[in-house]
Every structure is written in structure tokens, then in C-alpha cells.
Length: 355
Ligand SMILES: *Cc1c(COP(=O)(O)O)cnc(C)c1O
Image (cartoon, rainbow, N blue to C red; front, side, top):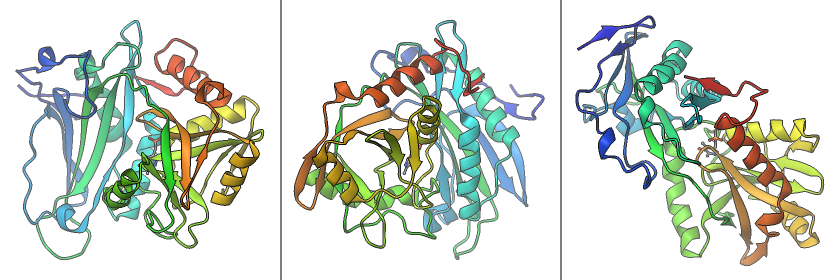
């Protein structure tokens, strides 16, 4: 069965939903995908077929350029269900903008709003029942694009696939984490691709992260490529600190500009905190912890929203942060965003994109 709708997204519903096999009280992140996916193909300079089809394998060529030369980007977004059943996506317009910035940097075509945002809306509409409703749960949404031209040789691919898959995820109560300040390996350099969400940025992080794990740390705190003096971000999340009365986050093209980070900084500003986006040196942080003026430190990202940091290792010495219970700002942010995203409170900024 096939039908065409107003945005010319072809819809081919599944005949065999897997929904009844899913234990919604025991969801593991990223393991079980919803019934449908969106797939669009780009060829001859234009987006061709856009379709919502049953989730399943994609056929690729062994000479497909993404596999060899790495033109591959992605996004991470969450959808939530209100108590009345309304399904809402959190700020997907910001992910769409960032996706196209990543695309431009990797010489890939932009994905128009009608495919990205309307596509998300229709995909979540057809898989509405996959959005979990228990407290703290959500639907993780993964848009991605990769180069599909079947030819060797380093040049921009002539063809691409854009796709969106989704998976229900359980309540994420993240434990506080420890970070090792990385002073040898580098995630991103000025002029590089640190600001883009491209697949290669994650491949390069695995080995140094394993070394940090071996030393007993959960994640790496990346520092600048030139001097390893300035703090950039943590693993796959941005860093935010409260030093004195200021809410501070590192800035620049070597970090990924997170939607969560942006959201938190906007809230801080609205709530009257002093907000600073600037370079933060490791020394400033360490001195601040020792002087007792660093009252909060956390990683910010879509997966967990806020992950408190309780210990930072630098040059063989550990620095411990104040107890999580007393962290006024980050705990307030978490409560505020939980209420807003589940439709329990007003949405004064228009952050909820209702499906
Ligand atoms: C995705 C990501 C973030 C967080 O971005 P959000 O939009 O808040 O999810 C931060 N750093 C890196 C490296 C990331 O990949």
C-alpha cells in the first residue's frame, strides 16, 4: 500500500508492527528501533524520493564513498509524550540548522526544512505509539546523512541518503561522572570540523577515552589543540560551570554548539544569572575548585540533559567538586526542562514542536 500526502512524502506503513514485543519498562538505549524510518535520496543535484517506510536494512555498495572518505553526519533529538497523549519534539529547528552547517562543512547538500522538520513530524505521527509515556522516558530521534556514490577517489559524492530512525529510551538518571583533562590527544583544531556533528569526530574519541577509562575516569575533558590549556568539551556533551555568580561555558568553532547548552544559557540569562561564553583555562577551573568558588560543573547534551561532574583529574591529581544536592542552578534547570518538555508547564519560548 502506498499513498502520497501534501508534502509528497510517500508513506508505506508496516504490516507487521513490532510494538507489542517491546518491554517499555526495560528499555536499553539505542537497541530497539521504532516501526518506521524516513529515507530520502539525493541525486542529480536534487532530493528525489522521500519516503516513510518500515524500518529495515539499507542496501549499500562496497565502494560507497561514506565508507572510504567519511562524508557522514548526524543529529540527536528527543520527542516526549504529555500526560494527555500529545507528542512534542524539543527544538528540532535548532538541530535542522546545525545539520545543515555540518553538511556545508563536509561539502554535502543541505536538507530542506520540508524534508527534515515535516519529515520528523510525519514519522513521529505514524510511530506515535512508540513514544513512551512513563516519567523520564522519551523517543530518541536520529537523523543522519551519508555519501552513497559508488566510486573510489576523493571528491564530493554525487549522491546521498538522508534518513531518520527513532528508538524509545528509558528514564535516564545519570550518575555524576569523573573527567580526565586530556593534555595529549586532540578532538578538534581551529579550522577543523569540531563544530560539526560528523561521524569521524566520534571515531577519534574512542581510543583516548579508553585510556581515560583505564585510569578510572568516565570521560575525557578535551582541551585546545594548540596548548592543551583551555577547556573545550566532555566526550559527547558540552561543559558548563558555575564560578562565583557566573554561568560559564567555553566557546568557539572547536566545540559542538549543543542545543542543550544553548537552552541552558538562555535560561540562565532569563533567570538573571551572569552568563559568559568565553575561554576557560584548566588552571582557572582548578584554582576555582581549590578556592571553593566553583560550585557547579556539568556536561550538557540531549541524551541526559545534565550530567553532574564530581571529580576532575589533571596531571595526576584529582580535584573534587561540591556535592550534587547543593547545586542550585543545574538542579533548577533540570526540573524546569522536565516540566516544560512533558507539557506540565508553560512553554514561553516556543521550544515544544507539537506533532
Ligand atoms: C551532540 C553533541 C553535544 C551536545 O549537543 P546537544 O545538541 O545538546 O545534544 C555536545 N558535544 C558533542 C561533541 C556532541 O556530539
